[in-house]
Length: 488
Image (cartoon, rainbow, N blue to C red):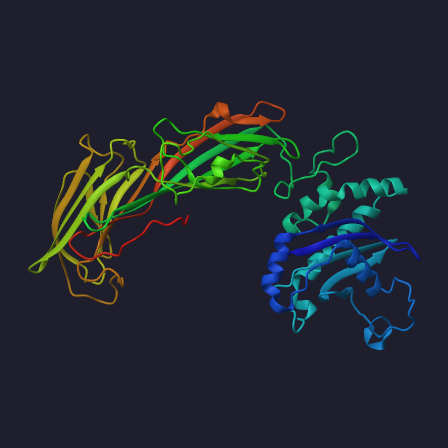
């Protein structure tokens, strides 16, 4: 339910017609290509579009006499939905109607092939197009006394349409009501162009919230012939409540002297400029002392809602928790050993930390004997999982271990199954969260956040580390080998 384009055209009797306002949505056009497939017809430029529309509405002079397409009996149109003849084929459906010397037109998105043409009642975008065009008509003709007032209203359309139909999705058909939600235009009578992602300016006390979240993935084998892998994936989310139609904000990410450089940085479209060194830092290249290590500055025009300022990766020297897992069968029981060590550079304060030891393709746990040096061990209700609750801190030695034996009952279809974890192939998966800390050392200095708008904003910053796909495989059995990727 979106629009590919919107037009307001001035057309008096015997006049050629003039496009007063038009708006196209490239993102919706991309969707139209995908949905329509071979039946897709591109929207022409304003000039050819105007010519084809006037011809279809029979508003151009008929210099060539009778024309079958325009004047034939089969051409009787009972709706305000038309097919415009263009160089690339018939552009359909085009919603258009004429009122008070103006033509209002829009092209709704059809989320299917146009060959054969679907029934109009099945295209929800047509009613939305009529609703928005009717709202546009009501706005232009309300309290209009002269041509100057009409011109002033036309000049307000860019901001109103951005607010009422952001990125081609109609949200508000009452344009007069939307006018009160938009900041007044600056002196001089020229409206300030609003970014498509900032359709409704903020009003209130300025404040900027920034949160850095790093997720660490790791696969550890404790084998000489297979290398352990780990990678950090970061995301910086922002919420900028700042007054103004298009305020300017600058956010900086900093690293300590021993921090790990940020790589593979992807930024939000609202970032207005960027240092080339930020974009060229790639995890494919070897990291050396010459790698760019910040500060990473992002000047931007922020959206009104929370958004992700950037994504990045980083190759930290060591994983936060190193460990090994051994599971082997002895007679009718399985002997297990798990050893974990927190790296000394990691903040030893967790919101939570636990290790889960699943047992697939086996019966329920019938017997368990164990010894742990720290935390507590729990058995899941399904009796197919051991949960080692480590808690909020590692001991002073930063090392903990679990040893024990486990026996299983007869297997049943209700027990957990996994096509990979057969025989002795098994893993331990870690879950943890550390607040006010990042593995790369990345942080936001509140004093480096600049807001070029009225008022003194309140700046708040937070950061945290989360585990994500953190596996330790049984070193006494085969295990799937994982290579580092750039997927977020």
